[in-house]
Amino acid sequence: MGFNENLKLLLLEKSMKQADLCRMTGIQTSLMSEYINGRKSPTIGNAILIADALNISLDDLVGLPRSKEAW
Image 1 (cartoon, rainbow, N blue to C red):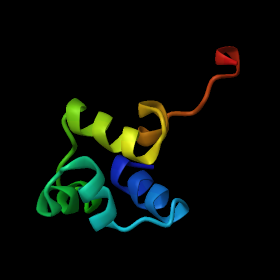
Image 2: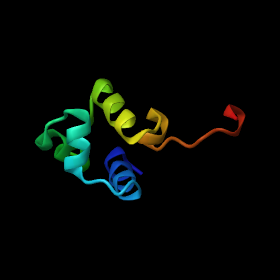
Image 3: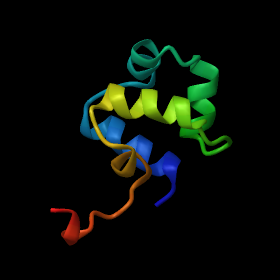
């Protein structure tokens, strides 16, 4: 699953709208739309803002599987 698909799923799971995420992160609506539609990938700074707003790790944001050794 790509970043944009994972972001869409996370927004659904957290019952958030794109506008909510934009307000929480300060990222412009047009840029967030490009992330959600897969036309652009976020900078690491914006990815951190998004992960923080969603209260998740960067690994979870990009959809990396969790390793059992990490537990």
